Image 1: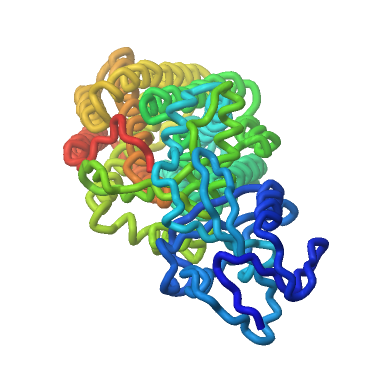
Image 2: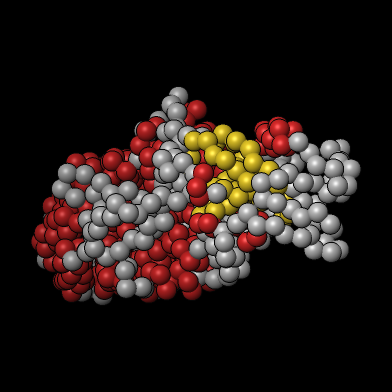
Length: 621
């Protein structure tokens, strides 16, 4: 049997329309032209530098490979390395009975930004996939590459991101309405079913308990199965449970269904991560603040809706109308793109490139020259600059590296280990506490507004919530304090990219303490509303910057899980705050309740000072 030489072109028992007689040698020029035609027929070329599934064979210089996808299948078959003898140019006898057609040739193939000499072998042919050896000596070391951050910076914020902003923003409007509903629902339930003030507090607490569970579930789902998957199921779940809760026949059924609504609302952080992964780094802070205006719009819309619906109809109609915006997002889900950063981390480079090309077309821009690559960067608890020797490595869709271990669908334990690793432990623990404190303060202020409104300020636990003047005071005060979020957002937008994330957070938390201080003692209605207005503005501003800071701290592989767990810890603050903001005030313990708010906010402000990393202007891995 004739030996196979690495520089010869030999084809045996070739199946298909281009069959050659056994033992016949194809001319070198014909093989080159055939290879060029084949490459034009392929959908995409993915370049990777990574070890093969088993230990790399000796003699493979640099262990480089290119996997080619065929058009009809649009998936990649397993790739196997060439034997060392073929990679090294030595002769090899064909294994008896192997029955695998062999072909090796050299052809020039044009890739974006560079030209290579490829050594092609069909020895490893499987399911129509060809293995291509990129010889190190033939590689252009100056290959043009770009990252997702490079592409986003070049394209800027355009029409594509504006559409993403609207969709994600409407998701936040729906989530804000479901939470703002708690300010109005409790007093009416207390009157209709004659439940105690503790039961009224429980109705709010179970929503936040559900959000605690939902934040973990949707975070894991979006990190392992895609941002779009997390968006869809959290939105669908919230809308269905919201409609069903309007049909509750009794108090216990309502509590159970509102808990499930909380599970769905717990996915609100996925909207944040998804939107921010389309935004250029240099103005991410400003756009996050603009994004937060949708939340403020949702709170104002819910207050206005309650003002109109509750006096004329009843609380069940308010539940139906509150669930409607979330339901309206579902028909447009098919238009939403997957995050290109997530696709890069999952090594789906062709899909990521397709999303970026779609973005470039929508923005009437173009991508940077070269090939999209993923910079395998690990976020740490200190500012660091990558050394000049660090390289941007092109990856294939099935890259087998330790960096992507956390993306395995086997469970969330690897992601949790990374969050609690030495590199991220300090940031993670501080974020957990600050999220807890901020949620406690923000949602506590929402509930304090209803408790300190008009005649409802009485500490008697058996005060009956009226349906006339008392209602007007509640709607008016809630509407005014909801408007306070607008100046809070404007102030945070000014400070976040100038003063920095950390300083903006701690300064607003201390300012919130200052506004709440006088409320330790009873004040007149006008001053109470003004102080709640200022405190709500500061709480919203700090919460917005915190929601921006958390995704920036974590790498893409655990970003949604990290932000989700931090948000879940924050929901514990939401579970506890009704006990302080409702039960304690109705038990004539206003001073003690306000002191608790003061202490929690002061500790959170100090914690913000100890955050190890300032993320202003930093790219997102």
